[in-house]
Image 1 (cartoon, rainbow, N blue to C red):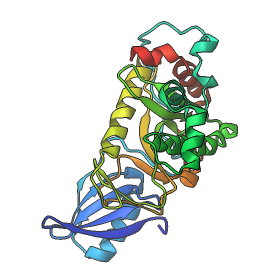
Image 2: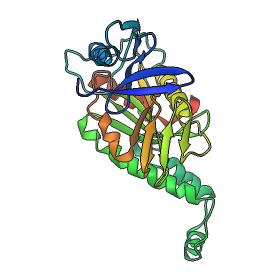
Image 3: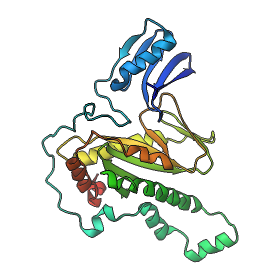
Image 4: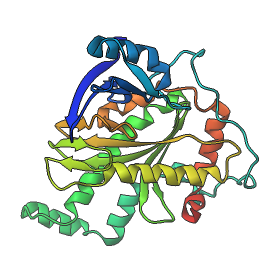
Length: 302
Protein backbone atom coordinates (compact mmCIF):
# COMPACT_ATOMS: atom_id res chain seq x y z
CA UNK A 1 0.00 0.00 0.00
CA UNK A 2 2.97 2.30 0.53
CA UNK A 3 3.35 2.61 -3.26
CA UNK A 4 0.09 4.56 -3.55
CA UNK A 5 -0.44 8.20 -2.60
CA UNK A 6 -3.58 10.32 -2.19
CA UNK A 7 -3.78 13.80 -3.68
CA UNK A 8 -6.52 16.39 -3.24
CA UNK A 9 -7.88 18.20 -6.32
CA UNK A 10 -10.35 21.08 -6.40
CA UNK A 11 -11.47 22.87 -9.56
CA UNK A 12 -14.66 24.08 -11.26
CA UNK A 13 -16.71 23.37 -8.14
CA UNK A 14 -15.46 19.78 -7.88
CA UNK A 15 -13.68 18.36 -4.83
CA UNK A 16 -11.91 15.07 -5.42
CA UNK A 17 -9.25 12.77 -4.04
CA UNK A 18 -6.95 10.97 -6.49
CA UNK A 19 -5.01 7.80 -5.70
CA UNK A 20 -1.81 7.67 -7.75
CA UNK A 21 1.12 5.35 -8.39
CA UNK A 22 4.63 6.79 -7.81
CA UNK A 23 4.93 7.67 -11.52
CA UNK A 24 1.69 9.69 -11.38
CA UNK A 25 -0.63 7.12 -12.95
CA UNK A 26 -4.14 7.51 -11.51
CA UNK A 27 -5.52 4.22 -10.20
CA UNK A 28 -8.71 5.63 -8.60
CA UNK A 29 -10.47 8.85 -7.68
CA UNK A 30 -13.30 9.77 -5.31
CA UNK A 31 -15.83 12.59 -5.12
CA UNK A 32 -15.69 14.00 -1.59
CA UNK A 33 -19.34 15.07 -1.57
CA UNK A 34 -20.88 11.78 -2.70
CA UNK A 35 -18.06 9.42 -1.60
CA UNK A 36 -18.43 7.71 -4.98
CA UNK A 37 -15.20 6.05 -6.14
CA UNK A 38 -14.13 5.46 -9.74
CA UNK A 39 -11.53 2.72 -10.16
CA UNK A 40 -9.11 3.18 -13.08
CA UNK A 41 -6.73 0.24 -12.49
CA UNK A 42 -8.66 -2.70 -11.10
CA UNK A 43 -5.73 -4.63 -9.61
CA UNK A 44 -5.26 -1.77 -7.08
CA UNK A 45 -8.95 -1.56 -6.15
CA UNK A 46 -8.66 -2.96 -2.62
CA UNK A 47 -5.63 -0.83 -1.73
CA UNK A 48 -7.19 2.32 -3.20
CA UNK A 49 -10.47 1.81 -1.34
CA UNK A 50 -8.63 1.28 1.94
CA UNK A 51 -6.68 4.52 1.43
CA UNK A 52 -9.75 6.52 0.47
CA UNK A 53 -11.68 5.19 3.45
CA UNK A 54 -9.05 6.70 5.75
CA UNK A 55 -9.78 10.12 4.24
CA UNK A 56 -13.54 9.84 3.70
CA UNK A 57 -14.65 7.50 6.46
CA UNK A 58 -17.45 4.97 6.12
CA UNK A 59 -20.04 5.08 3.35
CA UNK A 60 -17.84 5.09 0.23
CA UNK A 61 -19.27 3.34 -2.81
CA UNK A 62 -17.68 2.10 -6.04
CA UNK A 63 -19.30 3.95 -8.92
CA UNK A 64 -17.26 2.58 -11.80
CA UNK A 65 -14.74 -0.20 -12.44
CA UNK A 66 -13.08 -0.67 -15.87
CA UNK A 67 -13.70 -3.94 -17.66
CA UNK A 68 -10.07 -4.09 -18.85
CA UNK A 69 -7.24 -2.29 -17.09
CA UNK A 70 -3.53 -1.83 -17.33
CA UNK A 71 -0.78 -1.37 -14.78
CA UNK A 72 2.49 0.53 -14.97
CA UNK A 73 4.51 -1.48 -12.46
CA UNK A 74 5.87 -5.03 -12.64
CA UNK A 75 3.46 -7.75 -11.52
CA UNK A 76 4.02 -11.33 -10.48
CA UNK A 77 3.48 -14.12 -13.04
CA UNK A 78 0.21 -15.02 -11.33
CA UNK A 79 -1.06 -11.46 -11.74
CA UNK A 80 0.14 -10.90 -15.30
CA UNK A 81 -2.65 -10.47 -17.87
CA UNK A 82 -3.00 -12.97 -20.65
CA UNK A 83 -1.07 -12.28 -23.83
CA UNK A 84 -3.02 -10.57 -26.62
CA UNK A 85 -5.51 -12.92 -28.23
CA UNK A 86 -4.84 -14.25 -31.70
CA UNK A 87 -7.17 -13.33 -34.53
CA UNK A 88 -7.36 -14.10 -38.21
CA UNK A 89 -4.38 -12.55 -40.01
CA UNK A 90 -5.31 -9.57 -42.16
CA UNK A 91 -2.23 -9.59 -44.37
CA UNK A 92 0.32 -11.99 -45.83
CA UNK A 93 3.61 -12.29 -43.92
CA UNK A 94 6.10 -9.62 -44.86
CA UNK A 95 9.42 -10.59 -46.45
CA UNK A 96 12.61 -9.35 -44.76
CA UNK A 97 13.13 -5.64 -45.52
CA UNK A 98 15.82 -4.55 -47.92
CA UNK A 99 18.75 -2.65 -46.36
CA UNK A 100 17.33 0.68 -47.58
CA UNK A 101 13.91 -0.09 -46.07
CA UNK A 102 15.13 -1.52 -42.76
CA UNK A 103 14.38 0.96 -39.96
CA UNK A 104 16.57 -1.05 -37.60
CA UNK A 105 19.48 0.75 -39.26
CA UNK A 106 18.19 4.18 -38.22
CA UNK A 107 20.04 6.15 -35.59
CA UNK A 108 18.19 8.25 -32.99
CA UNK A 109 17.11 11.51 -34.64
CA UNK A 110 17.31 9.99 -38.13
CA UNK A 111 14.47 12.12 -39.53
CA UNK A 112 15.91 15.34 -38.13
CA UNK A 113 19.34 14.43 -39.47
CA UNK A 114 17.87 13.96 -42.94
CA UNK A 115 15.96 17.25 -42.89
CA UNK A 116 18.95 19.21 -41.59
CA UNK A 117 21.19 17.67 -44.25
CA UNK A 118 18.68 18.47 -46.98
CA UNK A 119 17.58 21.97 -45.98
CA UNK A 120 19.75 23.14 -43.11
CA UNK A 121 22.83 25.39 -43.02
CA UNK A 122 26.18 24.17 -44.26
CA UNK A 123 29.06 23.43 -41.88
CA UNK A 124 30.62 26.78 -42.80
CA UNK A 125 27.40 28.65 -42.12
CA UNK A 126 27.01 26.96 -38.75
CA UNK A 127 30.59 27.75 -37.78
CA UNK A 128 30.21 31.41 -38.79
CA UNK A 129 26.98 31.73 -36.82
CA UNK A 130 28.70 30.23 -33.79
CA UNK A 131 31.64 32.61 -34.04
CA UNK A 132 29.31 35.60 -34.40
CA UNK A 133 26.97 34.22 -31.74
CA UNK A 134 24.04 34.56 -34.09
CA UNK A 135 20.84 32.65 -33.43
CA UNK A 136 19.25 30.66 -36.22
CA UNK A 137 15.88 29.13 -37.01
CA UNK A 138 17.74 25.83 -37.04
CA UNK A 139 18.88 26.08 -33.41
CA UNK A 140 15.72 24.36 -32.15
CA UNK A 141 16.27 21.54 -34.65
CA UNK A 142 19.78 20.87 -33.32
CA UNK A 143 18.48 21.03 -29.75
CA UNK A 144 15.76 18.52 -30.62
CA UNK A 145 18.33 16.25 -32.26
CA UNK A 146 20.46 16.20 -29.11
CA UNK A 147 17.35 15.37 -27.09
CA UNK A 148 16.39 12.46 -29.34
CA UNK A 149 19.92 11.08 -29.13
CA UNK A 150 19.85 11.21 -25.32
CA UNK A 151 16.53 9.40 -25.13
CA UNK A 152 17.70 6.92 -27.78
CA UNK A 153 20.70 5.99 -25.64
CA UNK A 154 18.47 5.39 -22.63
CA UNK A 155 16.14 3.17 -24.66
CA UNK A 156 18.99 1.12 -26.12
CA UNK A 157 19.87 0.10 -22.56
CA UNK A 158 16.64 -1.93 -22.49
CA UNK A 159 17.58 -4.14 -25.46
CA UNK A 160 19.45 -6.75 -23.32
CA UNK A 161 16.23 -7.16 -21.31
CA UNK A 162 14.07 -8.35 -24.20
CA UNK A 163 13.08 -5.02 -25.74
CA UNK A 164 13.45 -3.82 -29.34
CA UNK A 165 13.87 -0.17 -30.32
CA UNK A 166 13.34 1.72 -33.58
CA UNK A 167 14.09 5.38 -34.23
CA UNK A 168 12.98 8.03 -36.70
CA UNK A 169 9.97 6.36 -38.32
CA UNK A 170 8.46 8.47 -41.10
CA UNK A 171 4.66 8.32 -41.18
CA UNK A 172 2.60 8.16 -44.33
CA UNK A 173 0.19 10.74 -42.90
CA UNK A 174 3.01 13.23 -42.25
CA UNK A 175 5.56 13.74 -39.51
CA UNK A 176 7.54 11.02 -37.78
CA UNK A 177 7.70 8.86 -34.67
CA UNK A 178 10.79 9.70 -32.61
CA UNK A 179 11.14 6.23 -31.07
CA UNK A 180 9.16 2.99 -30.96
CA UNK A 181 9.79 0.62 -28.04
CA UNK A 182 8.58 -2.99 -28.39
CA UNK A 183 8.85 -5.54 -25.61
CA UNK A 184 7.23 -7.69 -22.92
CA UNK A 185 5.26 -4.71 -21.60
CA UNK A 186 3.74 -3.89 -25.00
CA UNK A 187 4.50 -1.23 -27.61
CA UNK A 188 5.23 2.38 -26.68
CA UNK A 189 5.31 5.38 -28.99
CA UNK A 190 7.84 7.79 -27.54
CA UNK A 191 7.64 11.48 -28.34
CA UNK A 192 10.70 13.46 -27.21
CA UNK A 193 10.46 17.14 -26.22
CA UNK A 194 13.54 19.17 -25.24
CA UNK A 195 12.99 22.22 -23.03
CA UNK A 196 16.20 23.01 -21.14
CA UNK A 197 15.69 24.31 -17.63
CA UNK A 198 11.93 24.66 -18.10
CA UNK A 199 9.03 23.93 -15.80
CA UNK A 200 6.56 21.70 -17.64
CA UNK A 201 2.93 20.95 -16.77
CA UNK A 202 0.98 18.31 -18.70
CA UNK A 203 -2.82 18.23 -18.71
CA UNK A 204 -5.34 15.92 -20.34
CA UNK A 205 -4.71 17.33 -23.82
CA UNK A 206 -2.45 20.36 -23.50
CA UNK A 207 1.03 21.06 -22.11
CA UNK A 208 2.40 24.34 -20.79
CA UNK A 209 6.10 25.14 -20.75
CA UNK A 210 7.03 27.84 -18.22
CA UNK A 211 3.34 28.74 -18.08
CA UNK A 212 3.31 29.72 -21.76
CA UNK A 213 0.95 29.03 -24.62
CA UNK A 214 -0.69 25.57 -24.40
CA UNK A 215 0.79 22.94 -26.71
CA UNK A 216 -1.18 19.79 -27.72
CA UNK A 217 1.58 17.37 -26.71
CA UNK A 218 -0.63 14.86 -24.89
CA UNK A 219 -3.35 14.82 -27.55
CA UNK A 220 -0.77 14.39 -30.30
CA UNK A 221 0.89 11.51 -28.42
CA UNK A 222 -2.42 9.68 -28.10
CA UNK A 223 -3.12 10.17 -31.81
CA UNK A 224 0.34 8.81 -32.60
CA UNK A 225 -0.32 5.68 -30.53
CA UNK A 226 -3.64 5.18 -32.35
CA UNK A 227 -1.83 5.44 -35.68
CA UNK A 228 0.77 2.85 -34.66
CA UNK A 229 -1.93 0.50 -33.36
CA UNK A 230 -3.74 0.74 -36.70
CA UNK A 231 -0.63 0.11 -38.80
CA UNK A 232 0.63 -2.83 -36.77
CA UNK A 233 -2.88 -4.30 -36.58
CA UNK A 234 -2.94 -4.78 -40.34
CA UNK A 235 0.02 -7.14 -40.27
CA UNK A 236 -0.12 -8.94 -36.91
CA UNK A 237 -2.49 -11.84 -36.20
CA UNK A 238 -3.03 -10.67 -32.60
CA UNK A 239 -4.13 -7.42 -30.98
CA UNK A 240 -1.10 -5.20 -30.37
CA UNK A 241 -1.25 -3.06 -27.20
CA UNK A 242 0.17 0.41 -27.89
CA UNK A 243 0.58 3.21 -25.33
CA UNK A 244 1.79 6.82 -25.75
CA UNK A 245 4.79 8.20 -23.87
CA UNK A 246 6.09 11.76 -23.58
CA UNK A 247 9.75 12.14 -22.57
CA UNK A 248 11.00 15.59 -21.61
CA UNK A 249 14.71 16.31 -21.92
CA UNK A 250 16.59 18.82 -19.80
CA UNK A 251 13.57 20.15 -17.89
CA UNK A 252 13.90 21.50 -14.36
CA UNK A 253 10.53 20.14 -13.25
CA UNK A 254 7.74 17.99 -14.67
CA UNK A 255 4.18 18.00 -13.33
CA UNK A 256 1.00 16.28 -14.46
CA UNK A 257 -2.63 17.16 -13.88
CA UNK A 258 -4.34 14.85 -11.42
CA UNK A 259 -6.69 13.73 -14.19
CA UNK A 260 -3.91 13.00 -16.71
CA UNK A 261 -3.32 9.26 -16.78
CA UNK A 262 -3.61 8.34 -20.48
CA UNK A 263 -0.06 9.36 -21.47
CA UNK A 264 3.03 8.22 -19.58
CA UNK A 265 5.41 11.05 -18.64
CA UNK A 266 9.13 10.79 -17.95
CA UNK A 267 12.30 12.81 -17.81
CA UNK A 268 15.00 11.39 -20.05
CA UNK A 269 16.77 9.44 -17.29
CA UNK A 270 13.48 7.97 -16.05
CA UNK A 271 12.43 6.26 -19.28
CA UNK A 272 14.21 3.08 -18.17
CA UNK A 273 11.22 2.59 -15.82
CA UNK A 274 9.50 0.97 -18.81
CA UNK A 275 12.03 -1.87 -18.71
CA UNK A 276 10.46 -4.01 -15.94
CA UNK A 277 6.98 -3.96 -17.52
CA UNK A 278 5.84 -7.39 -18.63
CA UNK A 279 2.88 -9.64 -19.35
CA UNK A 280 1.45 -8.02 -22.47
CA UNK A 281 3.50 -9.60 -25.27
CA UNK A 282 5.25 -12.97 -25.37
CA UNK A 283 8.86 -13.12 -26.66
CA UNK A 284 7.55 -14.56 -29.93
CA UNK A 285 5.02 -11.73 -30.30
CA UNK A 286 7.72 -9.15 -29.56
CA UNK A 287 9.77 -10.47 -32.47
CA UNK A 288 6.68 -10.61 -34.73
CA UNK A 289 5.80 -6.97 -34.02
CA UNK A 290 9.42 -5.91 -34.46
CA UNK A 291 9.64 -7.74 -37.80
CA UNK A 292 6.65 -5.72 -39.05
CA UNK A 293 7.64 -2.40 -37.52
CA UNK A 294 11.11 -2.31 -39.01
CA UNK A 295 9.65 -2.16 -42.58
CA UNK A 296 9.82 1.45 -43.76
CA UNK A 297 7.11 0.95 -46.43
CA UNK A 298 4.60 -0.35 -43.86
CA UNK A 299 4.54 3.09 -42.25
CA UNK A 300 4.56 5.05 -45.50
CA UNK A 301 1.44 3.17 -46.62
CA UNK A 302 -0.19 3.86 -43.26
